[in-house]
Length: 208
Image (cartoon, rainbow, N blue to C red; front, side, top):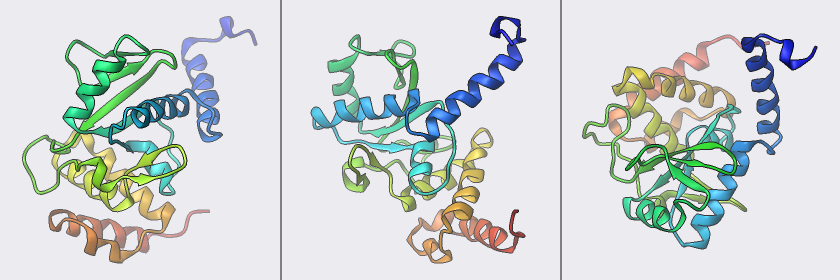
């Protein structure tokens, strides 16, 4: 059928399927945007770590995303903007942390060292300095699994609009077979929730 004859909702279904397929093959717009910003950050010696859904993929839970989440220090973000705004990146609105990769038309969500996940209120879990935690790969630096789980639990536990972060931890436990003992490496404030989720996953029947 001619695309022009399809209703908008059907066009959205097929567009999502096509982009999702490219994403999991490593050739989608989001992958291109992640590699592009990582390359620029590396060239400028700005510490960073890829977070969010792309980090979930790195640790074994395959989840599609339409944006790139990157952890930076406030100084790193300021330097990146100084060098690259108007040169492939624009702010999502004046003064925003977030940006858009104009070449790939992908949203860049920026997490700042020292800020607090979820409700944004002070707590014992905060976004860390990427220079101290990032795992180095061939093309990208990502958050380690312990840090990712800790941040997502602290986020989902304190903000209802971030409830999907709890679901992400459930799926990561399931897909990556995270050990119960991981709890010992987590901040005390999130340990009980991790054990609750881990035990629920362990008790659930195997999916076909």
